[in-house]
Image (cartoon, rainbow, N blue to C red; front, side):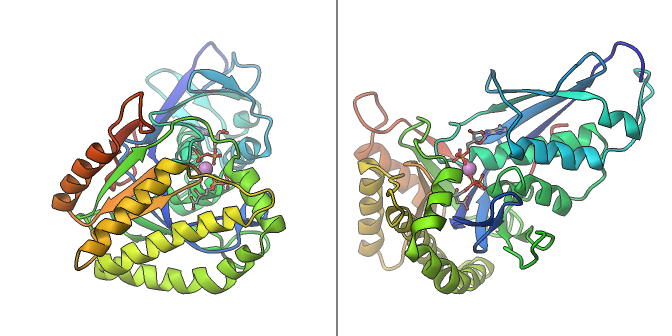
Length: 358
Ligand code: ADP
Ligand code: DP6
Ligand code: CO
């Protein structure tokens, strides 16, 4: 490995939005959830993380830049991901450039990581999901760790829980698992992105500002103080997950929309039941909910599902393209994006598969 060289790998990973939410850990270090969750992976063309990882004998420590600003890698989550991938690193031989890295060299070599999110970071659009999934994927390629998506997903989970679902496209389920060591807490693809390609996702970026309470801190407070969470995790979500899987398999939009909206609302109710209460949605978020509810009630069957992660931004899922066009028309009329209103912009989400730009 002697010499003056640098090897880089770039990967791109989409974010995912949960339709049955993960909120609450039973193990903080391994990131094991209190309930199963289901998400849809978005199109990387619109919302994704791009991460470049580099290795060189000239680097004297691991360093990372997020959206151009250096961040500390000392947190357990980054260390967990780096350690797990390093443990699986294999020999790399780049004959063209005369680079040979032996398996053991990876324990001594340092990496530099530059990551960029093409959508707001820490604003409730799951930047941690795309971010950690991309980091793990890029590091695995760099270090020639020949793990399959399932194992990489389990490592990404140790960076951010929601990240384990971003390694797959389409609809994805994170099975909470039972084992104490987390070996059975993993994501599986329920259906691929082609299964229900009528659906169109529009994201209303109400605010791109960083949230006051991170998902990690918020869910920790909820686990410690909310009684409603116990009921949700044990009684409500297990039944909802079964119904949601069925709705997805059968393309049953009415049931899908009812479950998605109800789960988003219960997640925010659980946030309100936390001490001190957490308010992720704002007035504009509430007005969007009222607008969609009113529309759905005026039709024979629901046209649009809404869901809000840990932030004020709305993820709206229209049953088909025609509805999506009407939805956008209504949104632009009632919530025009401008500096005078509380709406920042609209992004087309769409469903997609993982793209590897490495
Ligand atoms: P979000 O709703 O955006 O997922 P979280 O509070 O869950 O917000 O997580 C935000 C944190 O995720 C950031 O402060 C940062 O530590 C991490 N993160 C975001 N983007 C990336 C990225 N591209 N690579 C690595 N970590 C990231
Ligand atoms: C509301 O995965 O960001 O988006 O595991 O602490 O990193 P950590 O939390 P994170 O939580 C996501 C919460 C959510 C719902 C979801 O994505 O399922
Ligand atoms: Co997150």
